[in-house]
Length: 639
Image 1: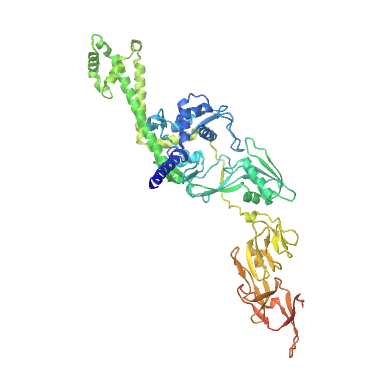
Image 2: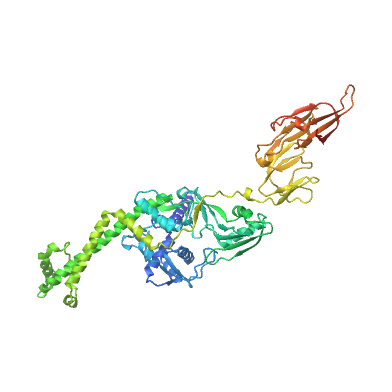
């Protein structure tokens, strides 16, 4: 058994690690999951400026992705709809309505030039073998912008998950600039569907946000939804509204979806309902408002790590500097090679060194003659001459030598030297160069990514406050049942499903409970009322009871102000019996006593208002110990 357990433990850990790192969680460096990275790599490989059938791209990506074409297709459609790296043509679905994209064979896509600019740099990209060893794929792209914050991400792995909200493109770039300059910055989410967002508990990307639909309530009898909260569609939103209406949360006459390129859901209200009264109920009981918890988990240096928005921005600011520095050094190396090659060509042709090989009969002699021919010009040559340099010169055709343009060569050399000076300056001022790069891509995309979501502050709508009291609470004294589904009996007052009620039973036991649909509370219930502070504060309760132990009659006046929901409390001492109960101040109890020798007073009244209201735990005031014929509660006559 230990052997089997070890196998299971080892295999599970390997599986969990694979799902976390190679499927569900994005890498902070390029903000992409493996399937997304492979899609972009495939598009870069086949790019010729024209659109490609998505089916062909999916097939090409299958060389790198071992999990089937369905996951590739859905990931490609999702990325294309974010309109950052992929240009699309055809029906890619509708983000507002939730309509699906057409089949892969009917739609087309291509990589955007912007993707090449911020992702593609093969000479500084680390590549690894694909799953079958036949091809190479990037480990991560050298991304120059924080893709994970711009696109957002969501994924569920083994034992962990990630939820990163999308942010505005230009605001993210502005934050990177601020980080490069050592300035403070603050970022908030921005959603493609617009809507409203409360970021008071965002906690730099580690907390939660409250999202709302944008409602047009200018017409008192009609509400129009103009923008959707993040994560919902017109279909899901309408379904939630219809479900709430069926549960009597509010009343509507009809609901229509006129959404095309812009969201437009029209809600016509029922007779007697007005938009100002229904708005809170829409926020409370439908998907027009809900909270989204954020968990910014990413793969950082091969380890799952929770990073705040600020940490991701600062990480990318440092990464941008490193990438630009590496690209400048690569370009400098290419320019130096070109400068060396052009210098050798000019000297080789202008000084007619090629003439010195005419009499040579062996390859070594030819090589030696060329080497010796360059000896007088060593100071003009940028670096040491190699055999590869000589072999390249010897391959120059006679036609090119005869048509050689010295002035053109010198102009190219000057351009190369000028660019090398620029690169040297950029490397010395690499932070300023990084800032200018951010400015450049921000200017190029100035009109493409406006902020769509309005940032505000609003409290989550309390469902208890928003619920309409449209249920009738009834008590059936004959059967002893209380609830809004009780048929017959006495109607008490209007409630909603979120109300709580105070119930005092005939045995003097009371409790505060959620309003019941149908609950047995015994026959002869003494009192039932709404259990909120304002309502309970209205009642000075008076209880008349007899203590069987000493034969005394007591009046107890009290308020119920504190309680635990569902817990039962006793108003009476042991061996006591309830005689009467009232909440009126203008009443009195009329006692009629049994005739006995030497008993002169046979009738006595006790006014409720003459006794102080005390704690609910107090025993009360003893009225009498005389034997009674009857006790009657009457209205006290006004003087």
